[in-house]
Length: 588
Image (cartoon, rainbow, N blue to C red; front, side, top):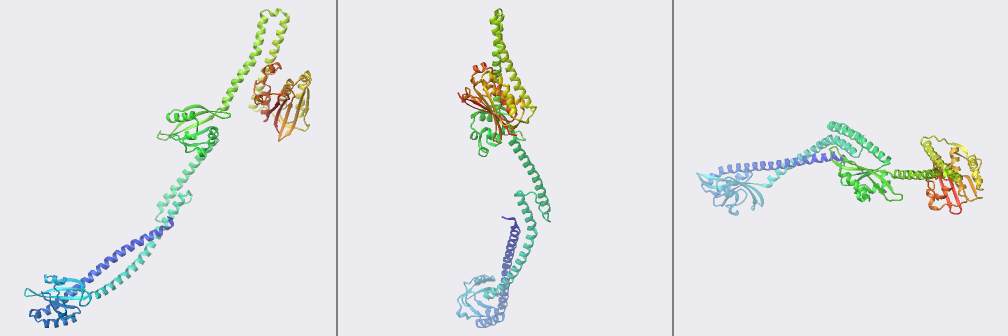
């Protein structure tokens, strides 16, 4: 119900109470008036009966009933009441309004019975003689200690009711006037009391709708309450702002976290999760929140860790693997949530994506294994031939020369591996410390310089190298590093080209990028090897690669150089038709 109706509710309540009070008072007053007026009429009838008894006692004692009847008529006329004289036998001997002979025996009448018993008795009943309701009063008449008659006085009730009705009308007028006065007073009181309270209740309604800034006006009668409510609203507003700020901060922190966060209660019901958890677990927060953890997440290992976290006070750690392409490795840290009294209220699980870390660990292990293998092969060969020479072969000139040439080749190969490893390490350090400087440079001189460096190797295999690059094409690069990358690609193209082949080096602008392509027409590469060509020490044909003097690090260096330039690498190849290695650089 709207608070603006308060004054009318108060007014109707006050008016109803006043009306009830007035009705009760009017009913009591009317009843009292009726009793008082009836008592007055009864006293009047008794007085008349007593006066008549005094005048009639002599004639009745002498049994002169004719005289009694005449005297009764005269007394009735003077006293303006009906008088009746009844003998103890019930016979009517005189009446002021009717002939006694026409009247029946009155011995059975209520008032007569009472009077014959010696009591002054009043009664109301219908008069068959006058055909009207009458009020009767019967008085016993004694003479020398003997009941000789009953003198009855009577009056029409219609007259009584007429007078009483006039009193009731006066009472009703007074009641109506009092009710109007009470209504005016009730309206004044309801307005005086209701208006300030309506103001307070309207203010409270604004508070409940969240508007805690509006103040409730302070008025007489509600001053203390209004001040307390305003103070409470100000405190609630401050606390609400604090809670909202903390909630926004918490949401921002959770949203910014790389780690996934799951919050659940003691029944394993999911209460909250951040965006990182959605992405890691592949679930939707709007559908998962509020559901039991086993319903939202289908990973038995994660569910076991969650149950373990809820059952122990100590932090819980574990690893899980999520199937997929690629599969994800997650490290889970779980802790119980406890309230101020130390009671467990739930748990929080933090999910760390260690997929890249695991991949890097595997790459490190594979790299160490590859380096060990690549270094061990030449070292083993050198060591073996040295032992052979020490065992006596040194005295055989032909064997000594052949063995030394082999050891020189392996030493040179070992040196190239170490040099490439150092180049990779230097590139990583320079990239990490921001020491690689890039500047806008013409691209054609860099490609021509790389062609020149590989010219001797190309002439040895009668391979033709051609450069196709516009003079005006410029790009933001480090010339030394980009030249090294192109040299590695040209060197590989020459190695895997047949004698008399052709290597094409081109550059062009394409889709906001500068594309450098090195194409050969050699043996080509199977499609299954293409995704891993730029990995360290990866070889398509390990035996042939070593025969050609490759270290297995050339393309890895090319990839790293392009990453330092903010670019990328790509390769296309068809077995038997050749390969095309492309370098994509951001256009400056």
